[in-house]
Amino acid sequence: MKLELVRVYLPGGTNGTIFLNGKKVCSSIELPWKNNEPRISCIPEGEYALRKRYSPKFKEHLLLEDVPGRSLILIHPANDALKELKGCIAPVTTVTGEGKGTASRAALKELLQLISPVLKKGEPIFLHIQQKKDEKYNCKACEAPYSPLL
Image (cartoon, rainbow, N blue to C red; front, side, top):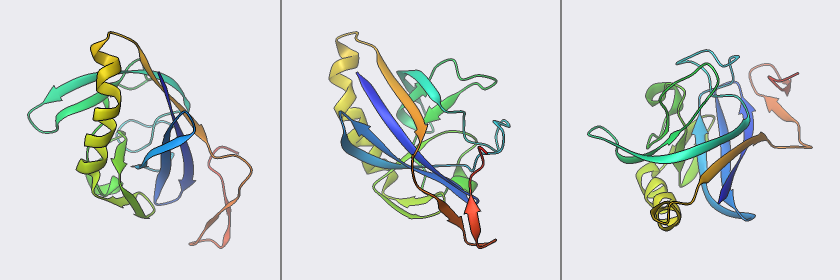
């Protein structure tokens, strides 16, 4: 199974949409892109294996494996990337601003219900992360097109 996370990079956070077979599963929020700096940046684009993980803080959630230069990158609930994330990805039901969203726990629950049967069969699950193509995004602070990857 391969999930796709299509991102929009903005100065205040990275917003995205997670798809399975072209169908939207949920939205997502992350920290802004800051050259993959640990704890202050979202992770690089690429493809990562996912596995289920449990912690007392987040309960059931997901771990991205083999992220270059990073460790413990999770998919866990959060509604404000700058306040609650340290490089991880938070599924959200609705994006409300740059790196902000609502109903993250509900979105994670839906995502886990979708992939749990595949994990129980022992089949691999991957998350492919890429930038949304063919669109320009405006940085409101500078009134100019913004792309951190140029």
